[in-house]
Length: 200
Ligand SMILES: Nc1nc2c(ncn2[C@@H]2O[C@H](COP(=O)(O)OP(=O)(O)OP(=O)(O)O)[C@@H](O)[C@H]2O)c(=O)[nH]1
Ligand SMILES: [Zn+2]
Image (cartoon, rainbow, N blue to C red):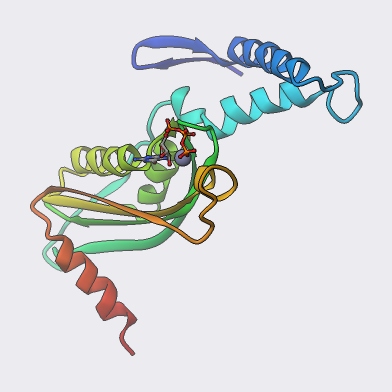
């Protein structure tokens, strides 16, 4: 297996990255006064490094997914496509605590439609890096807008931040909603589509 990836023209050896992060995290554990020889803790530096590189920060060490698209023919709707309630988790760059929620992705096709799963793949890719929610919202919208050659793209994210739940202000119930609209799309049309679909 090749462990060297080229991201934005930079070669990254993820195995070396994991080793270095593991060493740094071992220092943090030691500094906290915990026993690195404890059988339950001894592999924690490696576990944390593996989690960061392979999972929660993997978007820093990999390239964005390819988007499968299909040409629009004369029998295919050219109207708004809305994919709602896509769950995700990401990492707040201020405290390295998770933020967790759902996204709604909508686009107005131009000449192609997107494979439906690809919106969720793009969300997961950009979510896998430390950041703020506003940037995540905009990155997902910008990537889809460019890749789909869409008339317009709208992304809405609703998330709970653990940095606000388990520490700091400790506001367990609050959620943050962020939106990004690019091109020719009216967020009111997206929201009324969602409302219409809920009507019995
Ligand atoms: N805009 C934005 N702010 C965020 C996000 N995630 C965390 N924050 C905020 O970033 C701010 C960092 O503030 P600081 O004052 O530097 O950090 P702090 O002293 O730990 O702040 P408290 O969380 O209030 O204890 C906090 O208000 C967080 O709630 C995000 O996704 N978007
Ligand atoms: Zn946060």
